[in-house]
Image 1 (tube, rainbow, N blue to C red):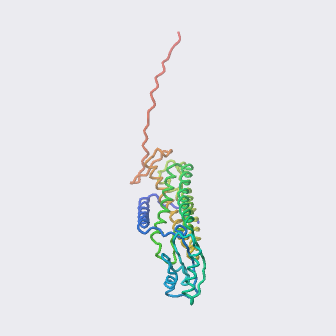
Image 2 (image 1 turned 120 degrees about the horizontal axis):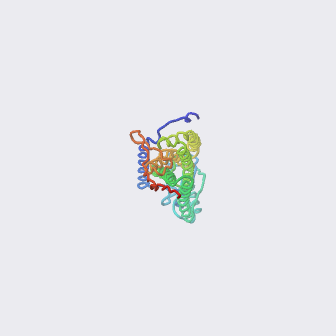
Image 3 (image 1 turned 60 degrees about the vertical axis):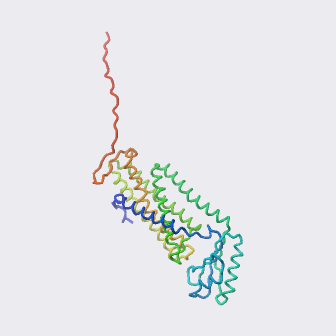
Length: 339
């Protein structure tokens, strides 16, 4: 891992391009959220969900199950293999058990030649779905507020603002991808449920952890390299933490990739959210949070106690302008002689 030990990449020199990339991703994500919206799971809608496994595959299996169930609003689709079917009956019904019994009874009666096994059964009542939706919103917003307070106390308010902006960037882009891609792949269910909320909270924690590591090194080097331009200090800080970032992000992504590729569809949505979130968290720590702090310090040179120079567009350095107030002149002492 000495590969990244003495790197000298100019990360902050490309921050304008990074801003543009982030802006495009946010616009696309918000557009997808506005046009397509999110697909919510039974956790937040209420209703009944059943995972069925039939003995024999069939090209018309989904249509056969749909005709057998014959319930208004029922959603039937393949789930994993060709013999696995997901039946979802949304609706805030208090009698979820009776709905499941009715669905199973109709399938067995109308599809007697193809035996079926109920692999999983999940039901959520109206009150529970409302409580879960409200609690999820409070959990995400509460986490962001606590992180804002923590970073503001440990560093400075501008660091806290930059860190929370990076977190919003990660969560909004991930949500935008969920809105854009849900329904595009049968083997990739991208529905927002409890596991996805857990993934978002994990993404928030992972992202701010990497951001705090970068911020801590920036704060340390601002005090050590007092005669270097701000961009140089920031780039040096990010490069010296790059090895840690690559090791942590790389090992995490490898573990999540195993979940995404080899575990069933039930966990694939969670793994997809984590893959995107961890990648964005690493990106935003370097190209979103740190550049925001840098640009703010360049516009407010007095906030940097060291009074270091800043790097101009042409590569020259300019010391921050300071107003020097002259001390009032002292009256000359008058010599007196004793008589």
